[in-house]
Amino acid sequence: MTETDSADVIVVGGGPAGLSAALFTAKNGLETTVFDTDETWLHKAHLFNYPGIGSVGGSEFVATTRQQVDAFGVERRQGEAVTGVASVEGGFAVETDAGTYDARYVILATGADRELAVDLGCETTDEGVVDVDLDMETSVEGAYATGAMVRPEKWEAAISVGDGAAAALDVLSEERGERYHDFDVPADAERALGAVADE
Image 1: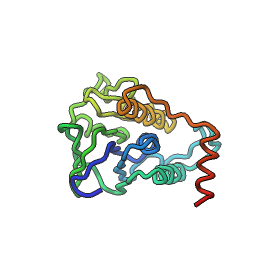
Image 2: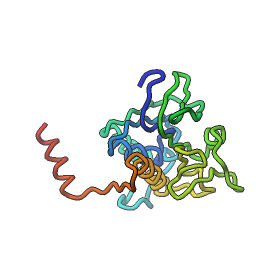
Image 3: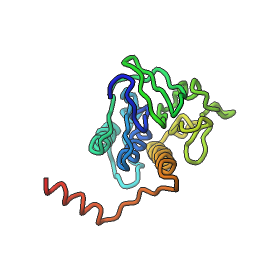
Image 4: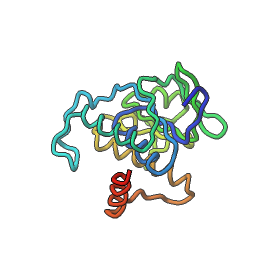
């Protein structure tokens, strides 16, 4: 992506919520860019409470998830900090020191840092967290907030991953004009493995 380029979805934040959202949107054909300053709390964590994983270091979890999103064509702008997000006609303008990036949807996944959401005009609750609906959409249409920024003191990787998935599925539903479900079956895996073997 170059200066003033556009994507379907821009995700701000490369922790579990942001990478989960990017995985779902890119896997289902939406051009997705993630801005990741690598400040996720997972680097300080070890996961024993994540379903399906007996034990994994937080940094290892992040590295594996990055590999997944990369495999689906997500553009990760590693180390490029977002300095502002604004509503514009047709979506959003995301500012960094390197330039401006446009997207139809923006998913904020900045941990407990709610500054970008507040500056964008997203409403907050009496507890000071970003107010979202069950699909993680904020009061600003097309803008989503996830993870620690929407819950006081409930900072868990499993919750954040679910928030990212919920936001992504709502974006995909909006794009398709009907409720979208990202549900793969064993035959899908067999086809994917077969395609890799043929390369």
